[in-house]
Length: 213
Length: 218
Image (tube, rainbow over all chains, first blue to last red; front, side, top):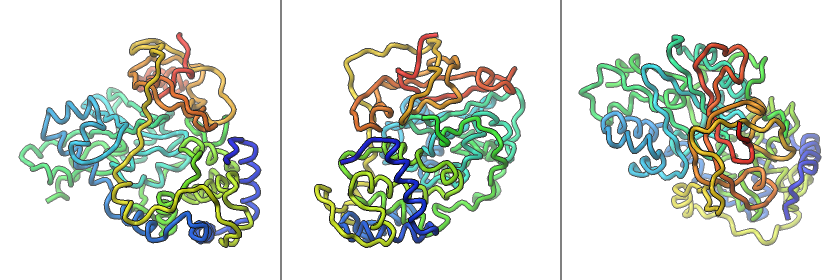
């Protein structure tokens, strides 16, 4: 039976801190062996999940969504209205998604200040910086300074909209389609879209045109 | 709770490592942690908010310095001990001295293809109508609460505007105590200038999703 008591958990953390191996990989090894012995984990299932998150679920999914929105205005309208329902059309299952669109005079950027909420099912594993204190602390207060570090310079006229993922609703930024891609096919457009542009730490994808054949 | 995890607006953290290589995992053990968590038979009374609360309670120095997935290991270890599924002794050596009872059998590799497509739904039906509507001026409550909550310190006491209503969602403060309750959830937009003195004169905005009891009418 779980005791939902903060003080008990604090004491257990202190106890674990002084007794578990100091190397993360060793701590994990002991945990996995124990869970296997306790018949709570099948190591082959762990392998299968590792494969899913290493190869299958990644930012290519989000890029596919963005490219579809760029070529299909009706899909884009549905996506902005109800993100989860629209991406289900592409086979990606999720329940709570809000898509926020960058325009000439707005820039969106996503964070989770309280933990590290991220649309894993659409973008795969989050970058380390997204989970680190510096990004989480700074982006709600100094988004322009953070963007500057990512090489995104914004004029004062562009409004910054910061989305703090405090509930189960996840966010995907819809970046602007770069000029000069008017005759591109959807699959080629998808290759243009970067992970960071869907988090909001990249804005102008024009520079990638030369890299995508 | 007023913990170290509530980082929004804290200063002094320095620069961000923007040149990090873009790979799903930086160390093999990190991938393993995620795989174990997804494969594990959890205790019936665990949930996402209880997990988050247990992570928030990691000692502050560890919270700020230990790698992210290492914090997951620490959090699950604490949850296992708290729920009498494992002892600290067992977690030190990785050898079991007892088997837990009442847990479902471990997920099989064949179950992964279905499980990977099922995302949880946090929306619930409730009888009470929402108190606020889009466009309302609201103020986030001034005081935090002990225990788990999703009202960050940086918006407490600040005025914002209801931008959207999302129906009723599982209420994290209660969920983390093992109580099933849902409350209306709203997106509330705050002017950056309302939150931060240095944002004066800017049109920038910050949006949060806040449950009804975190808000009062302004």
